[in-house]
Amino acid sequence: MAVRLHAKNRMVTGRRTQSGFTLTETMVVVVILALLAALSTPLLTRDNTARKGRDWAKIVAQTLQKARFQALGDRTTIHVLFYRTHVDIYRQDTPSPVLLTTTRGPAPNGEKTVAVWAVNNAGTVPAAAELTDSTTPPSFSPSLPTNDIAFSLLGSTINNNTWSIYLRNELLPAGHPDASFLITVSGLTGFISSNHKVTLP
View (cartoon, helix red, strand yellow):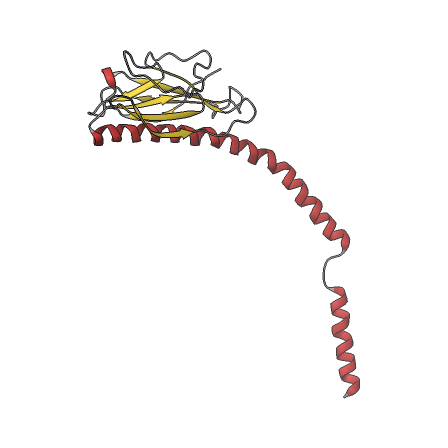
């Protein structure tokens, strides 16, 4: 009986020494994982950079929609002022306008960022960036600033002008499909569309 138990224990011990991975096998797996990580990192970084532009375009469109609803709800004129890296919403009150919200874009990477390049009602594609950042309070008289889209109490834009907002993801080359975005605001209805793309330099 004792001999049989001893033989059984010896067989179990022999099996245990044969299980597991060798050092060479482990190192091969580590090298393969390192290669996969090195290959996938640039793809993930590029996709994240492209997503910043898409997300900022959606946020700008939502900000415009919010301003339009605010004008309808408050029965007053609401102004959306565009700057290079942020968008401000003002209510036109007397004696001075009231800042309602400020929406900031992605943090700059050096001098490059996802920027609002231009805002116009002429339908012309800008040849270069036209907007800068400013902290000076706006004045809505005697005329509206050129970077201002104002919604009336009916939800339409002032003077029923159709506006174009051009956004440029400066972190991507000009030919990239996610490098430029166009948001339009219909003058008569105030309808906001952000599914257009345009080529900016």
